[in-house]
Image (cartoon, rainbow, N blue to C red):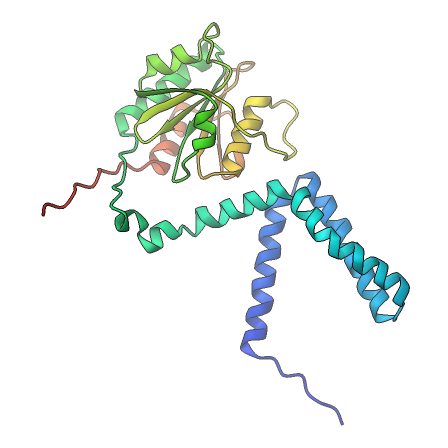
Length: 268
């Protein structure tokens, strides 16, 4: 007798979750060498399923052993992509906000850049663009960026146009690295950032690749001033916007950086 296939709500939910995970995986690896590796592994896995369905025991056992060991190899090969996925989860589904861990441990919010400091930052970028002075500025979000900060020289100075331009002056020993802004201060300069593995325009140099790589692994926002063209670009969430105007830069910074007053401790 024919039996009807029954589909439960959990089956539909299962399919949707798998589709969502595959889509996020595609977003993470598109444009990278890992994409071709995934296509090859997926084809190999489909071939293994066909071999098992045809009861080809010898070939099936050999491929089964290879696939079993291959899981460990995948962790090594896809280490950058796995890290990006975990950062994506931590950034977009911030358990710190959901569980209010800062409040639980008594840590208040730090004050971020105000409108006056945004104007100073924009003025510095425009001035450096006119003189074709290369610059790379990272504005931290919720991600701590301790690894990148420790790679440079700690400054902990207030944000000013003169200071930013001085750091990136061509004869300055810190001009080749990145400046990291955290809270309402320039915390470090001359910092080393991770490079993206994505395929970018060949006209873009190491500063642009580092800016995109930084935003792939964190929720930071990066500003780039081109040394060749003097144009200003901005990178966020692994994407880059090139040749933006002073007004656009100001608007993006004001939209993404909210001023938050530090929480005062409760009196006993």
